[in-house]
Length: 499
Image (cartoon, rainbow, N blue to C red; front, side, top):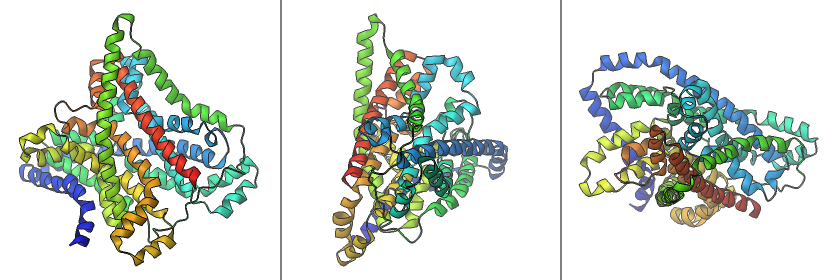
């Protein structure tokens, strides 16, 4: 019985938060809808599918290119990121990802005006730039993690070459990594809806949400099934093979790294968007003399609401990470695949399914508790949690994994493997909390009345074009996410130094 429970509990949040409500909602819409009308609506959505795919693959290519250069210089060149300033450079490099898209839109609107937000950024090129800058840090994290798998002998051989030649050789060796990274970013950008919505671009996610909310739910489910049919096989292909334990991830000492005089120029260019974003928000949020007290109150209130939301976000993120890590320890490949799939589907699909199933039949006293929202966020972090679980397991030496077979499975899992996995699981949980802090789509559908969500409040303020108040709220969000990012980088780099 205990063994059966250990097999089932990592799947319970996924079943209750995604597959069961989606199955019930599909049955209801199939019973009420017309298949002919649904398929005709799907046919008219084909151009939107192609335009979304083109936007996603273009942004994935550009983000991978930027992240690959970042990872190449960080892992292969001694520079500012290898000294004491790295605790400041790392948060600046990933600030474009940890900052909620609503805060970026607020900075654009406050600087150039709402007309520029509507006319200047409202096209495919604007959405491409915003998506690329947002997801480039993810490519950096993926490629930088993969660079730790370079054999020690090859690493030292590269260091004997001149800096430019060593970088060229390393760039060629990382070709397959860049392809896999671009494919993963493409899958992540396919359901992205928030940034394209600020740019005025209709994507497949917005089309699915429109179909599910206007009463044409069957066509929305068919579109989602087609998207899952594309994503599912690619996810299965990206899953690891038979080798799970002991991939020999070793962090090499910085001694012997080549120096390159142009590296600092690249870092300055990379942090310009983050610094510009912060300066713009500070300038816009600065109140007039007669509004100092009001501005101070709004800013402190936003910080307090964000601190309250961070507590829930951390609990949700830890639960998701632990579930996927437990499945990775047990080598349940298809269970991890099932956890990843909801991440690559529109968030509105998940939110509306939960609201129409569990939300309708739940007791009234639960209406003021964000349990549905928390369940949705647990499921939405599936891809991040699965990736963290696989990476954490791959860091455990194969000899320890073989020796752990002589003790009970639960003792080996929680007393041997868990301490070994914490250097990956802790940063992953912090990153998940940062993402939840800026999530809007599910929060808009499932948040109970009065729920403190700074990202949702900022999203609503943008529609009223209150630039000063929106900038203060956006600045508070950046401070909160930057604080968590500093904790994230401190844990990661601190563990790295200890090894």
